Length: 451
Image (cartoon, rainbow, N blue to C red):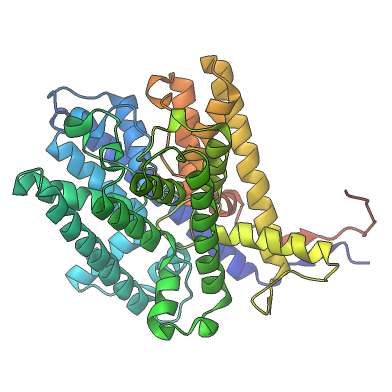
């Protein structure tokens, strides 16, 4: 029996590792640059530096499109600081390679093969026409953001002068599409108020939900929808899974919130609140309800939605809807004694099942460990800390109000979780593996009883 066999494709393995390292280091570089810019006195509304730690936390949250903040975005940061945050949200949401591609397209530079490989990895695509795909991605993303910004600007014109309405419209459209959850309404509706003043405002609620969903279903799903229109059967299995999961993860939580947490409200407000709280945990971070006043089961459902997140290759974070779908498909296959997981008439690869199980365990372990550390450091209930860590690793930004008062250790825990959630668990693991490792050990098989 051969105990050691050579990797089937060591070149592909080394390529995936190097690309993963590039992606991880690029996000770290963006965070570092954003921290330096936010540390400048010009970035603060007071004219004094916000300090390194506050700037680092905000830069990490913006680049990782999370939305957790230590200070209200409007009252703390000047127009320049808000502009820096918006740029980090855009780059973090669309991906650093999308921003780099835009620069190359603007300068009419040729994109190298290595850069195309990184682009394909960043958006979850393959090498076929990746440059053209990237162009279409950017055009569609800016078009969706522009339409959303125009509608929100018109709505805000009823309450604010045009310059302020335009600023609010653009900032919140970009923040919603990139699933960031940052808002600049603090001076108007109170610090850390998010969109609570617009809880039953149909234009704001519907447009924001549509922007969150558009950014969260993934750019490859857009391609499928553009190519095949309403012919759902022609979609790839991944697109079918993403769209089906998106529908299920909105309708079921919405129905739950409608009949429980918001059952005592007027019908219009009840519908708006239920819809928004079902959409925003995956993984936008805006809120229109007072989260600490929600029921325990309601907060648990929000926590689960935050961990699941959006689609791969999208602006959303979390362990991804496809990961959850593969886990449930595998569970169904085991219960029905089938040899492999199946979805939409297709068999799921064993490697996808292994990756999904690994990601689930990683996310649950990190969320639990982070919550325990914060609970010990702050003397807070573990339940509250679990909500914050789930929000961080899911790059959501929802909070029960404890984040601004956390100590340095607890902030560091959240920063690490935000970075992990945005870059991706498998990406970080591949980045940490030595590219020289091309041997795989094969040991004898022996049965073990589980369950």
